Amino acid sequence: MAELNGAFRPEMVGVRRRMLGYSQADLEGKTGVTQGTISKIEQGLKDPTEQQIAKLTQALSCLESFFYQAEREYGPPISAHPMYRKQASVGQKVLDKVIAELSVRLGHARVLLKSVDFEPELPLPRYDAEDYAADIEEVAAMVRRAWYVPRGPIRSLMEYVERAGILVIQSDMEAARIDGASYQVPGMPPVIFLNRNLPGDRQRFSLAHELGHIILHRFPSPDMEKQADDFAAAFLMPAEDIGGELRDLTLPRAAQLKPYWRASMGSIIVRAKTLGKIDTGTSSYLWRQMSFKGYRTREPAVLDLQPESPTLAHALISNLTDAFGYGVQELEGAFHLRYDEIATLYGLSKPTALRRIK
Image (cartoon, rainbow, N blue to C red; front, side, top):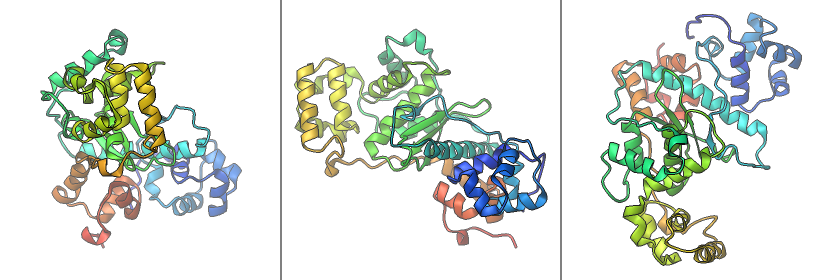
């Protein structure tokens, strides 16, 4: 068992409960502790007994230290693509589950980063969206110059993002229909969470979109989603590089451009319209063709792009297990969760591959 330090943190009971998708009534059924008592515990109105803490620990499948950790609870990010779009079919409980998981994993990121001297290889430019609202294209161009990106398509966007000191973590956000979310927490490098279920082209655009938020947005604004979309399109497909290839765009031509520019056919059509390479009539015709062929739901499988996998988070975990000799129980103590769940969250090997302390 991890050593218990500090005071009991009542809000962490609610975080863990929501992370597992439980209601307070569900937790009553699993613990025998009344819903009213659980509510008071979560609000800090009632101190739990040792027996109640033990029951909560078992029912919520975590270490007791989870409720004593110094890490705070985090709410939703200022933007989660597309968390704030109207989605009648996605309930608040589903969104709460994702937000709770992201909050817990931000705590994990802080633990991982404490074990290394984190020094980004590339600078991370910051611009005020209000100053550049009319020229997001120029912002994207300046970031490419700051990172010495060659002309043309970016072969590995993930590599550039991680070299700039941004921690990218994959998460299962499919049920909530969230493509990505980003946090800029004081004392930590920026963190981007990506839906691990995304196809490669959509993942790249979402990663570029969240990068746009980090570069442009310190605070929420009404136009931030469009600005991040504009940044992503310009960063992945610079006008001066792709413009000549978009004149008189056809659907077969969009399909040809997809594997080269590593962008969806839909994104290429939107880019052509934005840059004035096709008119409104041609754009509408191409979208009708996309709908007729079913490409708006699923673009041709033969054109699928291999998703780009983050490496920094796995390297930080390997640093703990290899350089610092962390075994199963020590990882559990660091993350306050059971190893099976840690392995699922971070794609780790089976427990037998790590030393378990007797």
